[in-house]
Image 1 (cartoon, rainbow, N blue to C red):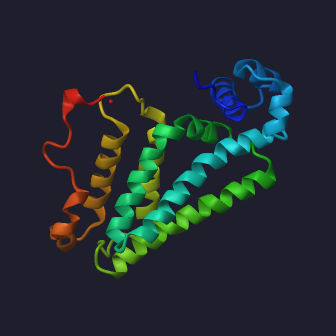
Image 2: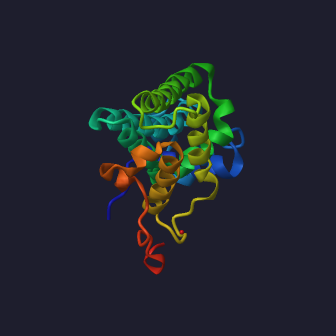
Image 3: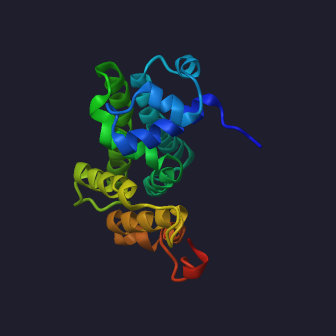
Amino acid sequence: MNVKPTKDRIIDAALLLFEEQGFHAVTVDKIVKQSGTSKGGFYHNFKSKDELLYTIHDSFITYILTKAEDAYERYDTPAERLFETVKSFVMMFELYRPHVTVFYQESLYLSEDYFRTIKVKRDRYKKMMFRVVEEGIQQGEFRKEIPVPITSMAIFGMTNWTYKWYKDTGKYSINDIALIYADLVMHSVLTPEAMQKSENQRFFMKPDSLKGDDLHV
């Protein structure tokens, strides 16, 4: 039987407690008890409860930023980059939904130094999305009448809200949801000419893409 490392057990316990009780109501003692660890184990892995909250926030932001940067380097066109970035953001909820929930509930309690560090990564992600949309317009793949900031923030708003309702026991898998979101985004931003290109057809859902009873949201 594989036992999770102490650090992971502490993070799992903190996620549960922070989500249920809020950051200030949860003490280190509660986290230690919930995780079945010790205070020594806690302070070996985290300097403080503040650092633990920062680690929770940083983990998923680092994940989506890395995925977005990888998509930008790996693919050649703005359409491919946007498609893969949207997909990777939604897929993130399979691993980090509790982290995102705690982030939105408790981010006000991050210390100023930790908040600045997180904000740097959030700003990098935002600028990357703006860049992809802008380049798509410049290269004639995306509709020129859509404003870059509004389009980018609309994508963020749609995908971010997933944490509120996604459950891994639902009818559709997270992969299915990611493909649906990507389809919605690509239909919204691509020019009619770009939609007709054969290489772009993979961005759209096929009639039989979702198998109903074979799925699980």
